[in-house]
Length: 418
Image 1 (tube, one colour):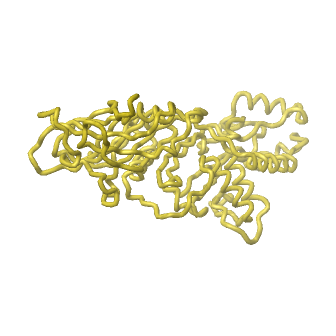
Image 2 (tube, one colour):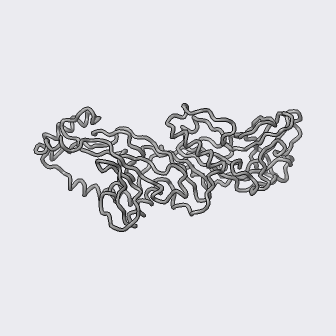
């Protein structure tokens, strides 16, 4: 039952491709095995295409297709998540090559593995903090509208990434510290420690700061988001605060002059409270039930003994090609990766006798025998997935923030009789 729910979207794509096609319409974006080769399915009507698109958007957790606008793939946030996406696709985070400090922000492999959703947030505003004793630091503010609510997702980690360009001056040691900006009872601004990193003037690369506590206070406990304060001190004179730019920290005094590849950003790691499972919307389930009834009515075999010989000639339970192309759906403007993915599907008969290659369960073997004796009371076992894999999708949100989602049970790896 669980696998059927997770494959509802693929089932609709399959049925829309196999039934009710019209001569004029829109590309399906679906490729299937015709028994000889993988071919693109026929056109579907506009209504059917819209239905498929809406259900995939529902699955992605996107209410509507983001508006078309210039998307900068060279920015620090998209590049960071694209690096994470590639590591996930390599099917083994610990086997990948070690990154250098010039890569777009380092990340913890375990944190990535434990997360279902990763969102990057750009700066929404930045200005020096007033009415505090530290006057040389800078305030950074992130827009949090795209962070999912606590009811659906749990924040596991949040990291602020700041870039430092190495200078040619003599090497000195400094501390870069992040504070959360608060308001005291008397109305004055206060700074609460968040995290600190040690660096040197010759370092060239990204600095990571753990800002999980600050983000949780903003999103879960409704604390006002007044931003984070970046403070820099020399190890030789800890009482003297200097401007972040003096040690090569990329300035945000004028965001239009910032290098896109070095812009500060926050990476938010989340765990879905439903385990990353997905269930299709009402229209998808209604369509699936309608198609399933027709399929059952047309394929029901009232006398399996009569057609046992035919069963050997028909295709036994096996995996078949099913490829969904996001590019054919014209979604390349907001889906960064992949261009599409191989979902695959299971098809074929589970007839007596069940051979070893059918991956039949013991229950399926018993059910087959009982079906032979009582075909009207007990149905044949079904050909269904026995092993499935996740699919990661990287895409833009409405305000150009970038999100990486890992969807469980999206790819069929093997089939068997159940």
